[in-house]
Amino acid sequence: MSDDSTHFDLDVYFQSAADFIHKALKSPGGKVLVHCIMGMSRSSTLVLAYLMIYHQLPLKHALQKVIQKRAIYPNRNFLALLLDLDLQLTRKKKTCQIL
Image 1: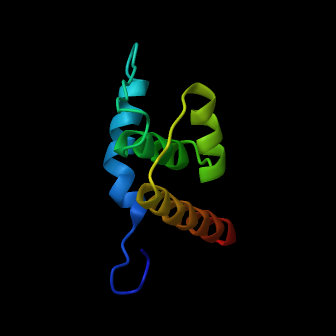
Image 2 (image 1 turned 45 degrees about the horizontal axis):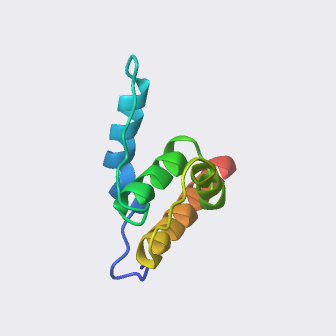
């Protein structure tokens, strides 16, 4: 997904959904219902992205946290996007530590 001609920041791609979830959870009595059939679609992917962006969890730990509450099965393409996001967030974190 990250070849030079089609590269884009996945954290920006996922950011609006992560922002929505974060804002809802921070509001008084805030809750978010994430609904999908069998955890196989975008919804589980967006929850994972939220955990990665707002809680600085690597993909592996985000997956473990969600799986403790509900079985999820993001498809191969969504997992590839999350792996790319994980790499971008890791690079960003390393760059910030160097500065």
